[in-house]
Image (cartoon, rainbow, N blue to C red):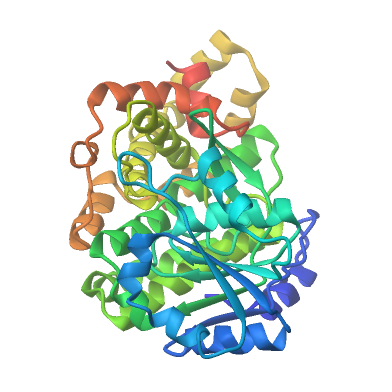
Length: 404
């Protein structure tokens, strides 16, 4: 599993996919028991003087001064921006949060530090980019794979859209802090990882059928992170330091795979699109937010079911495929017939939905839509509409346009 930028860059120089590989401008990735101290050393090495910490009061309370103790030993000028919670008690990456960070960041700021989970990073990533300032990632829970990516999913007027902003210039993850994160956040991180089963299949499908660009190196890096986590699910479920180190390394590696190609296709497919539908619905109805990875762990089961129990029925029936070609007469179906064996092999790599649920249950995470508070009507509506969120040729798009 690759978490070393230099190693990935060297591999990219030998990749023959023909797509553009982006330079990964992350100077340092530190995952250790001394990450906070290393972060302070890094700030000094970069000659940063004016630092803004972006966090929230829940995270600050959970850390009990652990990061502040390290940074207060310096002569740096530190300002802390506590992002305000909404009326549900959640921190949301929306217009209000962005404006707050922009207003509370002094002009003379040298660098912003995202101290928290995924939402804090999205807010910091967006604000720092718009201000032309670098930011540093300091994750406090192994909950998502977006810490070191460029994408910032932002809610604007109740609708969620991902903007390509900037990656952090460094990431510092303190293992003992991650191990003290709530188990639901650890389960959410694992949920985000198992989403790669369907995102990678969607990427293969979109490449073979929709003609979208594909990079085997980025796909392999992502697949390796997935395999590594699944092989060590017992350690991750124990939520000990060994387990959270494995999980955070996998999440970081997934982020690097996205950075390499400049978009989220290897790590985000139909399962993420359904998740975004649920998030927007909850925001519009003023319901408490659900952890991103918790949603993805459940929506991955939905996409797995579509691939294995709906789409495969057509792939394995010459009669049904020919009938589709006769009824729809489009190039997508012709390409499916042409690449049928490759698609079937990709689908074979997806575990049965019940197996995915079993792993989430082992981590004591929410493993069904009911446990998340998502009713059957919303599940069905999102399956029918989620493909409209992103312009990617996922299995959701094909099924809704050709089978339903």
